[in-house]
Structures are given as structure tokens and as C-alpha cells.
Length: 349
Figure 1: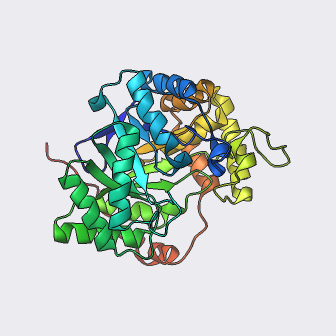
Figure 2: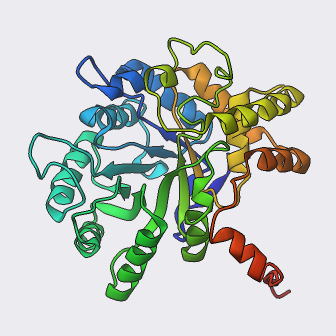
Figure 3: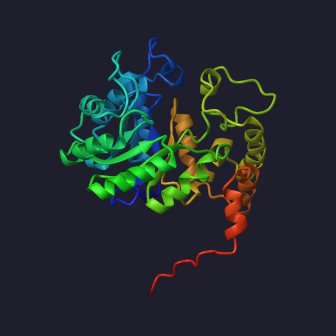
């Protein structure tokens, strides 16, 4: 297992992060039941396997199974006797957690109420990475940033991040934080797969410029890139994608990618899912890839991606088949400024 800096901070996290959406769920949990409803014993088995493999980074959210995911994650760490300083816990706030109009969003009120509830469920006195889970078109950015900065000052939160925001808004938030001396976003959690490379247009250049770490959610496109699906195939009944068709994917591009991934997988004696994860891990702008699992066997296969080293030729082939169609202003940048290539930085001897 490799470890990478959390953004520009001095904290190191495993390049594989265990996502916990499959923890919890019940008959009344709506979409969360379709994603996963692991009981505590199964959660403990998956957590134990991940820890032995070197995973020190765990991601959850208050809205996952309406708090059950956080509860089972916290209880598992206690059951397994894990030292708190040996793990990095990330959770999120934004989603609907009650019937009232103020039980969602990125307002100061909802953030302050939610962080205390998350700490209780996780059975800890601090959250390592607290993330805003979605875009709030109502709350001013300043209000959100000030609330997060207060949590850092009070010691309840150590670092802050964001998920599912546009590049311009993250850049604005970073500028405001630096101007006002607030704790700034250190990470972005975003959707990214070989069949869905949209974030490379605006978000990746922004992340590189502002030195935010990228956490990838749904690296297998909700299971679509697991190898179980393909043109003309019957959707497996127990597959997550069959019951919860998300995130949206251009299927023509996805199937073209899967075809090449199958050939690469066969050459390495690996699964298609492992190739999809290895492609992401080879990207220099990826800090950590979030994997989720319903079984230990599924977790084992995903964890094995850290040992799959794709050749330069294989990576080039996968890049080519998954390449994004040209869009403005990108094609104009290449036409006008293609000859102005920055000189690589050479460190002094």
C-alpha cells in the first residue's frame, strides 16, 4: 500500500480509501438498502481485512443510511481495538437528515448541529477530514467557510474538504479562505472513472494549481465497470447497478473501454475491475481511490489493484479509448498555445 499527502498537508493517507456506503441500511433506508445493508459482524470482517492490507483511510457520511454507516464504522474500530491515531476518518455533511427545512445544506446551523451528531455516532472526539457533501446554492460561501474554520479552531475537525462542487466555486472558496485566514479546503471528493473523465476539463487543472488532493468516488461507475456488465449482457440481479442505476454513463464509451480493459485484464490474469482501479491509481492527480465492498472477496479483488502495474503501452491504449471529445475552450487552448510548453522543473543538485 502506498501513502500520499492529504492535499498539501503533512497528513498521509492510503491510496486506497475504504468507503462505507454499504455499512448499514434497512427496510426503511430507501436507496441505501439497494447500495448495501451490512450488519456489524460483516462490517468488522471487511474492516479487519482492509486494515491488514494497510488501509488507514475510511470515508463515510452522515446521510449514508441516515447515520447507520457512521455508527457501524465507529463501533467496528472499537470492536477491533484500533488505535485512533492509526486511522484517518473522513465524513461529510449536507444531505437531508430530518424533516425540517434546516435539516440539510451547508449553513452554519446545519454544520454545527451535524458535526456533533457525527462525532457521537463515530465514537470519537475529532474528525480528521470533514467535507461539504454537495453544492448549496443558497448559503453564502463565507458562511460555510467560517463555520468550518470554527470547527477546526475548536479541535472537533482537523482538515476540511468538499465534494461535488464546480471548479470555479472551489477556487473562489480557496481564495476567500486565504484572504480571511480560514482553514481552507484540502481535498475534493469527485466522481471519476475511465468511462467518465469529465473532471479532467476544469477540475483537474484547478486541483493541480491549488494543490488539493483528489478522492475518487464510484471508481467502477456504480459497478458498471466491474466486468459483470457489457453490451447485450443480462444485468446481474444482486448487482448494485441493477438496483440503483447511478451515476449516469455514456454507455457507448463505457463498452468500448470495457472491451479494451478485458484484453488488458486477461494479459495480467486480473479482473476488469482491478484494471479500472489500476488506471486511476496511475494518474498523478489522484490522491486516493474510494472502494466499497459487500463481501471480503470483493474487497480482496479491489485491494489487489495496488499491485497491478499497467505498462505504458496499456495505459496509452486505455487513455485513447476513453479520451474525452474536444470541447471549447480546450480545443482553442491547444490551437493557440500548443507551442508554449512549460519547461519541466529541475531541482538543484
